[in-house]
Length: 253
Image (cartoon, rainbow, N blue to C red):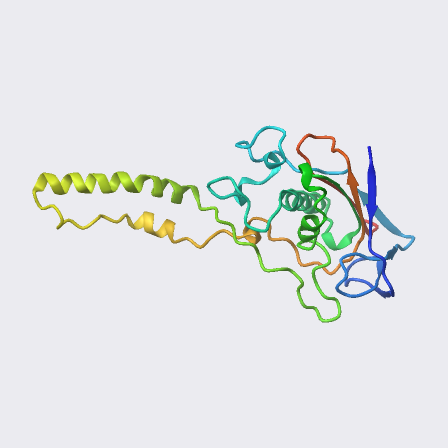
């Protein structure tokens, strides 16, 4: 398996730590996505996860395709992701949410994650999507400026997906209009009948569009873990574009 390590050279560093993390991290700038290094106290405990990939949630997609590992809640009626979102980003959001749930099961928090390792595979001829991974990563890590406290989370992407009840209402609308037309012809008052409106249908169709933040809200998190990003030639599961493993540092129980 071929692997290529990528990283960022930091020109200067300052020591900083979150309010609750038991480790300290050295960063070049308070808006940097990752730490240059971390310092762990001798009495701390470390939890290491295995590398996790996405689940196959999109059963409408071809089995073993990258799209089959994308949450269908992100997709529009034609099965497309929101404009600007990549498949790697969508898979990464799912994996990072799984990691947050895994930590919660062990009474741990994202701010206690000291190291993140991600293994990215290319999606066809487009190459490895490092930027898509970074966008997903910043929804869960390093998204608060620790100098100002300002959130660095980007505005949520708006999806075009509608609820299933809206789609059903839309598909039924022509039939309802045909029935109205037939009724008008039968009564001999063609043109005078007003189209009937279903209040329930109207309420559903005016629902605000779904946003990515509703599906994957992310977490405001000051922690800058060390970040290792590896481009790999293949993944253990066909269709996976991303695997993530973490190390969390916490106080002894």
